[in-house]
Length: 126
Image (cartoon, rainbow, N blue to C red):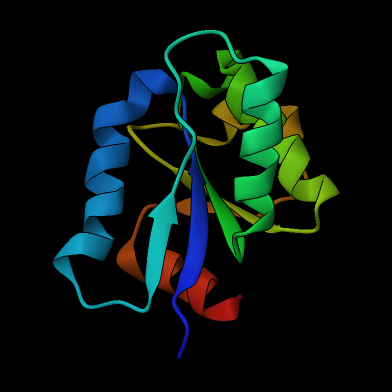
């Protein structure tokens, strides 16, 4: 079976939580891998082109929904890109975020609490 590739979109302020989140794949023998395009500097057209290529090469996208997400323009662009490319998107609440922190770009997208079952079920549905 081929490994499923899942793009992880997150606000740079949530990098530590993203590392913990993606650590799940490293600590378990799972048939998938996580990829991302995190940047600390403003993103350019070249970044967008490379990012779109990475997103298109993934089976799905998980967006880490936090209190920082609404201000993360790059992540919001990644979500828009995934939807344009027909990549399935799932939101995962982290660090005490709730539906109040879900940006409009994720309206109509199922967003769930961060549990192994929720993550696994999404990936297995791809």
